[in-house]
Image (cartoon, rainbow, N blue to C red; front, side):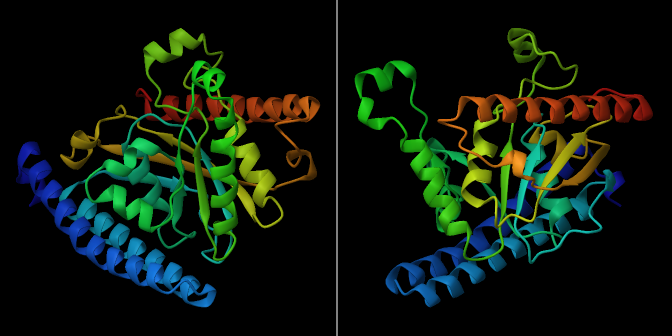
Length: 301
């Protein structure tokens, strides 16, 4: 039946279902968030956090159902067998499209705790979703330029302090902390401008994952290295919900957190160099993996 519908009709119907689903669960989310604010008691707040994550999980479940009903995308996913919803993870991934977020939410639903992203502060103004992210305690990051910090030196380190506070909150219940290591979506123009040494990736930034490991390393059960490939090309959100992304390939590798990954990234220059080299090696392996998957699929990333 869905194959008989034109792509624009499929996209419009899917988008409507996304909106209805988001509004419904967001109302419940806001109600629990208000109750959490009204009773600042530790045990009560933990109960509310568990309920908030359950509501967010139901939202993802319905989004996944929407995708299955409307789209006929083929999913090739490997590496989820040993994961648990009762553990803490740091998730790192390559980034090509906003569809990546829907992909990550779909494949990890029911396998690991709800994903928490570090977001730009401006995203809090996104209608409905901004408040939902705030209610779920997604950390909103404010990035300062060098010129701004020169004029206002007291702002230096504020983004690090936000990360530290967020990581402390993540300790109370199992959480998956998500980081797009490249810091931005891949484009050919960005790849050329960076003179990236990788065929399919931008240069990785190590500061974000180093700080999460520093703040939560002893509690984290592992690093999930996720590689996403779109054999038919990475489409936009509209193309995805319209059924124009025919195939998604995902590989998940669980990496142990060893002593070499724990240290003071911001004051120990030797450790910072070693950690950056570890991330570079990780990215070289990911680039080779993408190359193999692209050749198998006979299509672009």
